[in-house]
Image (cartoon, rainbow, N blue to C red; front, top):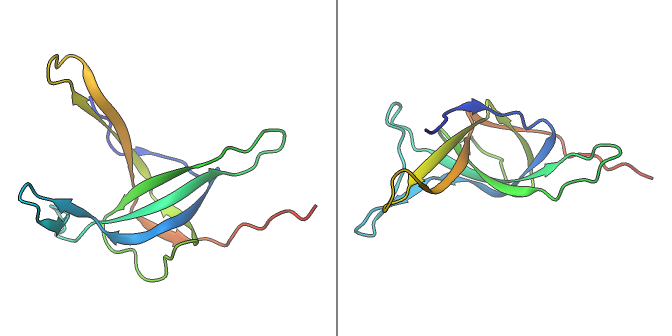
Length: 130
């Protein structure tokens, strides 16, 4: 069973653009590449790659962070460049499972993917001068 559109709180993370938003592309069996289009709106979907790094918490070692890809329902607009800090608007996470071909009761692969209604620029974090 796959869980869909679970709200996700990323307020404890700094999100930095590592790959600017671009149209999400799909490769067909014949090798042609076409943009992914939303079935409801007909709009081309976008994807952005972000580096999610935990914000420092006093008394705890800071985590290293991880790169995540986030699906967007359309073009988020101009100005979302590499190195920019952003916030996700209405971020959700979805899960998926791929059953084993030999024994469908077993799961061969599972994972999750993020999506958001949009991106919002945020001020670059200020480092503490010590």
